[in-house]
Amino acid sequence: MTSARAYSVMGFEIGTNKWRELSVPMADRLEFATLIWRNEKLTLVRGMCIEDAFVWELSGDDSWILIGKVPAELGRRFLGHKVGWGITKCVGIDEAVCLYKDLGSGMVVRREDVEKGRWEWIWVDGCCSMRGKQVQNFPIKGVVLHPNLVASCLGLR
Image 1 (cartoon, rainbow, N blue to C red):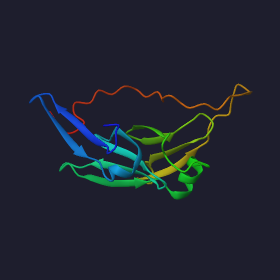
Image 2: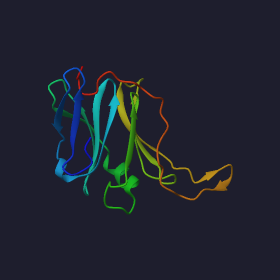
Image 3: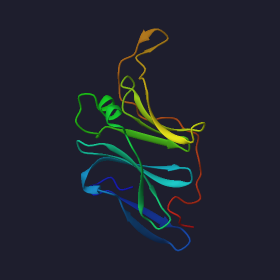
Image 4: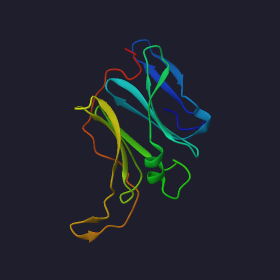
């Protein structure tokens, strides 16, 4: 994923030693964009200036399909008094997509509800104390996930 505007996805096919580029939906209006590997598909999570955050999946024909949008009430709660998604970070696994920024502010999670057979958005409260002591609110630098070696993220072999 390129980090400069306008965002795009670059893939390298090892077998042919060639690069390829995929455009990103509404790339010129993005404040943050993250690629995650979810359910064996390349997934794009992105937030747009003064708008919402969206989850897209890459289809077999290299087009992006919208699969989710952060509900407005969770987006407002997540952003607080901030107007944009610029400091948002994101991680994902097969069962969930997590948007976070700092320790005390909480997290927006899109998770699979296996019993209902659908995905749902939930709020996870931030951590303001540990072992009974007040914790200073600071930016989270990362979230620990089990490593996953993927043969191909863009369908390249």
